[in-house]
Image 1 (cartoon, one colour):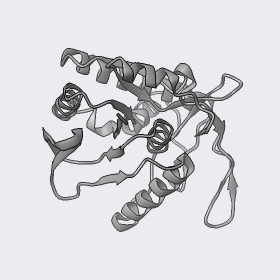
Image 2 (cartoon, helix red, strand yellow; image 1 turned 180 degrees about the horizontal axis):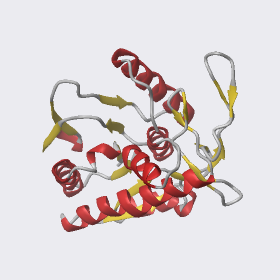
Image 3 (cartoon, one colour; image 1 turned 90 degrees about the vertical axis):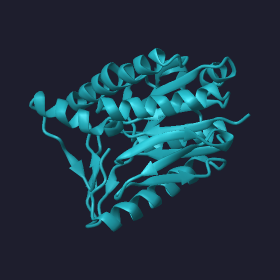
Image 4 (cartoon, one colour; image 1 turned 135 degrees about the horizontal axis):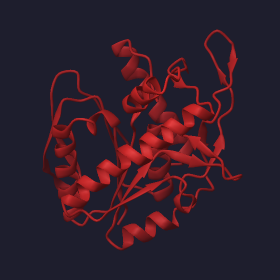
Length: 247
């Protein structure tokens, strides 16, 4: 059975009450026998850690510019803090969660992102930012899924040279969904929400407040198409809100 891929925004994992809701929802899906892969972000905690370290946050048109020092903070926060916190909470809820990054098993094999072309025609080097590769190896994830585990994957990619790369969490989730042939990809972030029950086929039903958002895409298509569709959907939502896109 094709798995469900769920991308959870880092802001939902900061607050204990929201984390509790997320864990309860994941536990219900996992207990239903539906294969589940979780990918997550952590942008706000990264920003806070950068500020604490005296490192300037640099972005261009909403895209994070990632130099060596910034990458060190990104890895420390996503892997050492956010991923570990989420896996610990899921374990306490008796979910067989396994904390991973895109480095593990090569599931997040990535190429260095090309320079970003701005709307005014400038070319900006994004630094240690990666774009997932079609050659990424999904065998570790499929083995875990087949044995009843829930992979929880932080969006750190790895180049063929072994160098770590910062990958946008939405793009990373789309990559995993496409490569795994997922039945569905759900992206949840920036919501005041209550995950309140499991519905048919293991999907989540969400009680949503004003200013909530949910992006749902069919992941049974090539990874690049998923990436492009996610970017278009996100751009439209952000255009409607007048917001800049963050990583």
